[in-house]
Amino acid sequence: MQGLSKMGLILARIGLNMILFKHANDLVLYLDKQRKSGLTIGFVPTMGALHEGHLSLVKQALATADIAVVSIFVNPTQFNDPADFEKYPVSTEQDIQLLEQTGTHILFLPAVSEIYPQGTDRVNNYDIGRLETLLEGSFRPGHFQGVCQVVERLLRVVEPDILVMGQKDYQQCMVISRLLQLMGWQERTRLLLGSTLREPDGLAMSSRNRRLNPEERRQATAIYELLSIIKKDIRPGSLQALKQHSSAWLVNKGFRVDYVEIASAADLSPIEDWDGETPLVALVAAFLHQVRLIDNMLLDKTIR
Ligand code: AMP
Image (cartoon, rainbow, N blue to C red):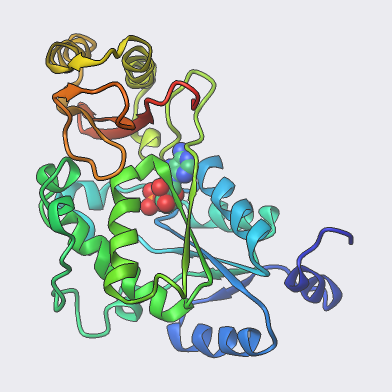
């Protein structure tokens, strides 16, 4: 029993495993009670089709809070491409098993009408500044507004002490940090970032990898290769040639490239001339046929 969180102990004692909630109101009431008895809440929002990367975030929530809440909701308002939404992989039965095995306390599995009782039209416009138009923002117009819309709704239901998100979606982490600021919740909810889990050949784990055929799956590892090359080769001075060669290299490997960017790790502004000191992140978004993959790597030579 040693090492179990307070909530883990309670559930173990009454012989319960994970509790599934489908209705926001029920979850609000339940969590209110737990909060009143002094338990802290860690939250991991997901769109399901879970893999080890998601589970590593759940483990982080379990390690830092008493109750780990995971949501699975494929959010229609963040898909700028309807085909991407329709083809988004769903594996709820398997997800439930994985979450249970990982020790998740609560799964929130809402229908669209639970999240958007007034419909999916956007009422709020979130002022996320340049994040709106940079990189993902530029190639997926409206995407981050949809992300803010769903995450705000989920946060108001779960009211977590800890929110765990993956660095795999680097720009999204920055957007959510801004959202917490816009909500005035910086003190209330601590945002924790989980590092990117990778397959043995380096490909970042992603639900979308399931849509790759075997040939594409082999090709896909080139993104990690490229990020590693950039990290190894980067030198102070102009980055123009490195960026151009990187993009051409991916095209040569069969990708349709949205962007290869080297940017300030602090605010994602593109860096053209590097002073050798500003912390950098390299970010890639590229398609293999219909499947769009994203990845990034911090270029600090001490971090992998
Ligand atoms: P998604 O289901 O794709 O919306 O992802 C849910 C959460 O898991 C997000 O915070 C992602 O950044 C995170 N995530 C996705 N892939 C990985 C990965 N390979 N390693 C760690 N976290 C990940």
